[in-house]
Every structure is written in C-alpha cells, then in structure tokens.
Image (cartoon, rainbow, N blue to C red; front, side, top):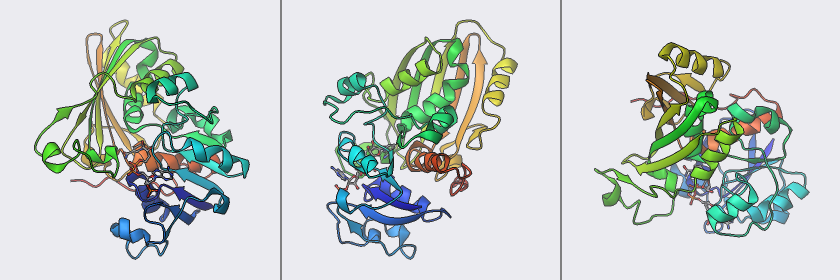
Length: 328
Ligand SMILES: NC(=O)c1ccc[n+]([C@@H]2O[C@H](COP(=O)([O-])OP(=O)(O)OC[C@H]3O[C@@H](n4cnc5c(N)ncnc54)[C@H](OP(=O)(O)O)[C@@H]3O)[C@@H](O)[C@H]2O)c1
C-alpha cells in the first residue's frame, strides 16, 4: 500500500511515520509539511535517523498519488483535503476532529461552518469495526474520548451518570509551543484546564448515546508533567448497584476478543509507545470506578489510525502494532 501523510512534521504525523516504517504492507511515498518542504524528515524527527531518506513535500493535492492518505493536520484544516482525495479514489483516515461529530454539533463545538461535511464511521475500532471495514473515510477518534469511552463502554447502558476525570501528557497539545505547554508552567505541577468546556466532551457524549446509554456525561481534563499518556478515571453511576464479580464479568466478556484492550491495573508506562489500552474496575455500591491508560499518540492517534487502516484493508488488526509499552 502506498501511503501519504499530510501534516507529517507534527507529533501525530511523526508517530505515523515511526509506526508505518515497521508495517510490513506499507510504503510511505509522501510526507507533507508546508514549513519544512524540501527538508529531510529527520530534520524534524531525528529519532528516525537511519530509517528513512524521505523529504517533506508541500501538500499539493494534484500531486498526491497513493492508496491511503492520513490527515494529521489541525481541526478545521482537514475538511479542505477530504473530498478531493476521495474523488481520486484515495481512502482517507482523518486524525483531526473534522468528521467525528454530527455537522451541527461540530459547528457549535469548533465555531466554524463545515464546508465539506459528510458522514464517516467513528474509528474507535473496538466499537465500530463493521462500519470501518466498508468505509473510504474514517474519523479517527480524539485521544481523551478513546481512553474514556473504552473505560465506560461495557456499562454504558446501565449508567445514569458518567464523569470522566483525565490526566494527559503535554504532547496532546501538538508541536506548537504555547504558554500552557511552556516547561516552567508544566513541570513539577498539575493543572486542570477547560474544566467544563473541553471540545472532546461532545464526542464522549455521542459515543455513549451510540452505545445505547441515556446517561448524563461530564469531563474534566488535567495536564501532567509527562510527554505522553492519558490516564482516565471514569466514575460510572449505575441505575442499580452491581456486585464487583458481575462488573468484572461484564468487562472481561465485552473485551474478550480485543487484542488491544487489557484488563490490568493501568499505568502510563505500561502503554507508552504502544497501541494498548489497559483498564481496571472497582465497585463501590452503585458507583463503578473504571480507570484506563493509553498513549495519546498511539492508541489515541497514530496507532489507532493504523488499526483502522488494517481493518479497511483486511490485514490482521495488530499488523505493525505489536510493540510493548516502554516500562519503566
Ligand atoms: N497530539 C495528540 O496527542 C493528538 C491525538 C489525537 C488526535 N490529534 C489530532 O491530530 C492532528 C495533528 O495533531 P498534532 O498534535 O500532530 O499537531 P501538530 O504537532 O501541531 O502538527 C500539525 C501538522 O499539520 C501541518 N499543517 C498545519 N496546518 C496545515 C494545513 N492547513 N494544511 C496542511 N498541513 C497543515 C503542520 O505542518 P506545516 O504547518 O509545516 O504544514 C504539522 O505537520 C490534530 O487535528 C489533532 O487534534 C492529536
């Protein structure tokens, strides 16, 4: 498969290159960056030195010739690429938020008019595998909604309230430096941000509804002094109390065929660099506490995008994604 990555100089794009270089069925034929066009990829991603001779190119749609294009560009920017690529028979996996929400919810959440809206399967592979198989365009999920939704999914139907409390490493904010991500503002401290207003909340709510849930849902993100990883504590208030044994049975049953979901005590270091999502659950009366850990750049972005590609292409789902986490 010939692959083009649009937005290859960013964190998610860099991670796509790292993972795809080890994928037995893919060859990257173009990797774009407007600001670094002509420069070697290793000028931006020195950790890939010796593994690739590719140079960044400009994202000129008429010159793109591939089987699958990954869009790793900021939200509101992906929509300009999707239709022209699809019209040329190229399958598209969009890592931005542009195709994750219903049109009116997207426009309200992101404050822009969607000029090229179309429906696309939400690429949370464990929940939407059948739709993904048939699709030409995939809306790869946000990093927070991935870990959060996987934590709550087995009990979504029985819940009356779900509260997600998430801690994220700084790479979730992308490569562009800002005051929020400036080292002295992040190191040796912990902050909550966008306490009630984070743009990933509508995605989380949308997924609960698709799971048949009528639960209310709230979300507060925190920034932690780490590069990668998201640990989410999901407080799931059930309509009726449930025994610990029954809850565990539900989770094990729900994920029994899922290679990338492991039922074990989560730690960011167990999943760092890997496509795994680790989940544990404990019960207190009618409150279930489900904790999940993912790497935001792998299961939360590039890894899940490749998992989606594997499903679309009929490859075994774990192809190119069997790396263990990097612990400690
Ligand atoms: N970071 C994460 O953990 C994470 C997780 C899940 C999803 N995502 C999503 O993935 C996307 C990329 O995130 P990121 O963290 O990698 O961002 P980033 O580090 O800021 O990288 C953005 C990339 O897009 C390119 N770009 C920007 N505007 C463009 C345009 N109009 N046309 C073509 N290329 C453009 C940039 O290069 P040039 O400006 O040089 O072209 C750069 O390569 C975002 O939509 C983000 O929300 C990120």
